[in-house]
Length: 270
Length: 334
Image 1 (cartoon, each protein chain N blue to C red):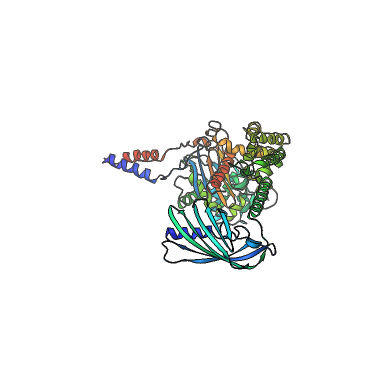
Image 2: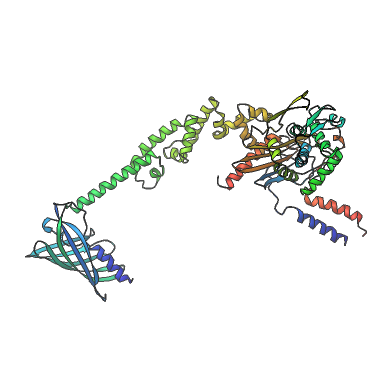
């Protein structure tokens, strides 16, 4: 009886896996990757593996903020926000900034303090915000995603997958403001009192270097390695690349995007 | 239509008068009517009327309706009657005899009897013909007409070959029994000029854009396309035309990419003059095994919570289900 049930579970598990596994022609480029052309998966490796997503997490943070967007709302930096580590603006407790500017810093500079400030503004505290993130992930059908913090710090049970990140990026890119911000090469803003000025440069190395680059977000932590969700569009053809732990992420992303466009052209007689 | 009738129609055409287009005065324009009766046919075939420009006085066999494959012999004139023998060559050979009678200077009538085989069937037919002078025309000897057509065809061929040289239509010079074989040296002279132009990267790109089969052209003229490309690549490298090198010069690109792209920061490489080379390198390097093997990140952490994080591996779908099954086994009471 028990054996039968176990066999049944395995069979069910197999049935829930994709019927047609995508090709994996580049097994050495990343721990997990997914390449989609016009929404269809072209190549993939371990696309459903649960891996630390680093700052790709901030795509969800930005999505939630944009879904109840109040760009002119003013946020006062808390001590917890000022204590953030990693990439940051070095905000000080008491600084006041507009939500729109914090969002810019979150997406372009991947600033953890700006991201954390947005989470607190949105839900009162980070814990409540993370709960919202996980609810939204479930709504989007992200079956291999679980967040423990708002900004992508390595943490036990903080994970996502290449496939889920592609779905999340799709949802975020449907927000026009998100799509506008992720292609900005840089931006300037100040605290609301004008005393502190910030210039943030987009960390996406493909912008301006790869024809058609249209975002989206990079991430890095010691455990996650170098990650990126990269989107490019040429003549109405959209290619999305998600890389988890890709040591040469920009070279790899650029190469995969070019190859995917070529493959599309080849298949469509261009 | 029965075969015999089809054959008869063909035969009628065979012995129809050779029509000549004409201008007034040097010949006589005749309206010629022919009709045919054939053994076994229930009724006579309808007559055909055509116009022909005949020599003045209808000398020789000019009045006899026939085409080029037919020749007449033993023409014998007696009074106003002329008898003759006729033989038609080609696929359907026929022979026969005939006679015609002049009815004054403006008309004649006659008939001929032909036998032979046509499409494997025996043919026996009688053709009646009559002519009526209706005006004047410019008469040309059939041989002269043929010569004229031949000259026109030669001229046409010359023009076609010249056009093939102008358009560098290599097929016209390499096809079996090429009609333009004599002009091949001229064609190759043009190809040679083109290969000179291709020594420069701009000329090379313009040429390959215009002539997708440029390599066939070169080979047809015993020139090595690889040498042409190599010359352009050397020139492009000397003048630092990296876009050209990246697009056309695989060997040079590889060397340059190794030196200027490999192991270099992507942004830095893209901001350098070698960006076109590096852009292609990005694509090519994907297949390098081992050089970019994915490993866990090793330095720098976003936060102090990194140590608490558990490294995730990449389980297969079956592994995940097996794990879940193990957990379930523990919970099951049996």
